[in-house]
Image (cartoon, rainbow, N blue to C red; front, side, top):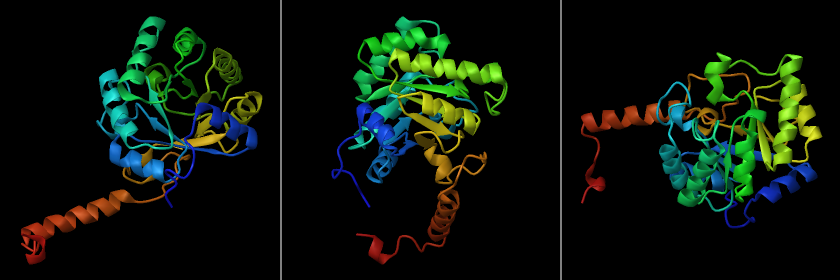
Length: 271
């Protein structure tokens, strides 16, 4: 059932209210107008224009190659299809690390050129100056801790993060730093469920989990993964809600067959 137009728009404040009420936050990615329109109308609270577009839209192995211009293109397309959800846009690799002035310029470009609602940044203490500078300009920031895909070459693996005590304690400290800096929410990716629960209880801002258990304040998945468009990625945390890869493959094969047999178009399908 479509909820577009019947429910007030989601804001950063509303997400905090949802946490306080114990109402879970549903978040999905989108990268284009048509998908975003469907996702929004289905009732998703937050739409992430993720740098995962590098993987599912552009075919790269990591998220690192995607550029700010590419992210702006995807975000601009998504925003046109959204009436209700809060739209968050990833700042891509190289647009905020090590230089808070560049970070602010990047965030301003996204907000001005896409009309999105906020940006997302990976990391904790290392990028806190960039977070503070962006927020000081009035731009909402969502944090991202745990497995941070832009740092894949540092980690060397996509395995679960923060299983050891030292890394877990750093993640907790970073979460508090991000909250104190003014972040409105934090994504926790691929960390032990008990750690995610601890962080979620200690913070007043919402946490959004992906592979972080059920105690976070919300969940996020990549839309191509949960719809089964991609079929070569099957981590434990992924639940496939459809098999669009199979549906699409069958439909396209049927189309090819009909064209070659001259069954399509028939007399009713021409002028």
